[in-house]
Length: 407
Image 1 (cartoon, rainbow, N blue to C red):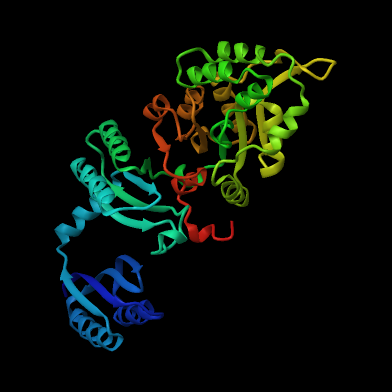
Image 2: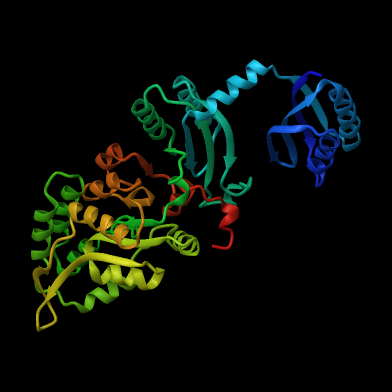
C-alpha cells in the first residue's frame, strides 16, 4: 500500500453545503486533510484541499468527487503532489510572515501590481489576499467618503527590509495610497493601548492657533507652530514663545473654541470600535488640557495628558503655563508609564501623531503611525496614513468593515 498526496482545486458558483458534501466523501475513505483554504469572490467559490490517502482508496475518492461536483455544478481538478514537494513546503513554515496592508479611497490594479513586484523582488511570496473594507458601490456619488483596503499575508525573509519599506513609501506617494508592512506576530493581533496626539490628529486644527486668532496674534503664533512641527526649532522654546503671546486673553473663549473644534474624519467610528474591543486610549498632547478633557468627555478617552495654561485672578491668561511641558520626550515617557500602569507590554502599544514632537512616541510604540503628517515625520515613521480618515488605523490592526458595521 502506497501513500498518495492529492491536491483538489474546486471552483464554481458558491452555495451553502458544498464544503460539507465534499468533505463527507473524504471522511468515508478516512482521508487525512493536510491543508485547506477557501475564498468566495462575488458568489464564486475557490477552494483548495490537500489530502493524504492510500492508493487503494484514491481512485474511488476521485470518482465520487467527480460525480458529486457535477451534481453541484462546480469543477474539480486533481494534482498529485510529490513527497519531496510536500516536505519542501513544510520546511518553509518556519520562515517569517508579514502583513502588507494597502489602503486608500479606492484600490487599483496598478497599486496591487506595483506592490506585488516589490514583494517578489524581495524574494517573498503572497499566500493570501483579504479584502477588509465593504463592497464598493459603482456610482461614485454614492461613495464620497469611500475607503478601500486589502490585506496580503506574505511569507519569507526580505532581502532588504528597509529598502522594501522605502520602495513602498515611494510608491504610495506616487500612486496616492497608504501602505503598511508589519510582522505577523502575536503582538500584532493583541494590541491593547493606543495613544494619540490631539492637534492636527484628532482635530483638524492647532488649538493654540485658534486661541491666537482670538488674541489677535494669529500670524505670529502660526509661524512659530509650523516651524516647530517641521522640526526646525525646539518644541519647548516654541511653546514658551507662543504661550507668552496669549497673555491677556479671556478664558471664556475656550468653551466656544472647544464646542466648535473641527473633528477629524473617522474619530467617532474609531473610538466606538476601540472601546468595544477593550482598548485603552490616551491623548498625549502638546496642546492644552482644557481641550483634551473636552474630547475625553465627548469620545470616552481613558487618559489625557497635555499642558495647563496659567489663569490670573481676573480670568485672563497670564502668558505662562503650569507644570512640565508635554513635549516629544514627555509623550514617550507617558506612553511607557500608561503601558506600565495598565500592565501592557510596550509591543502591544500604538501611537498616532503628525508632528516632529510625536516621533519619540511613534518610534517607541509597538506600532507607530504618522497621520496626515509633515514630510519629515512621514519619512521617519514606519507606517503612515495620508489618504483617508483616522479610522484607517483600524485596518492596520486587521479589523474588517463587517466587524464594524454597527460602529
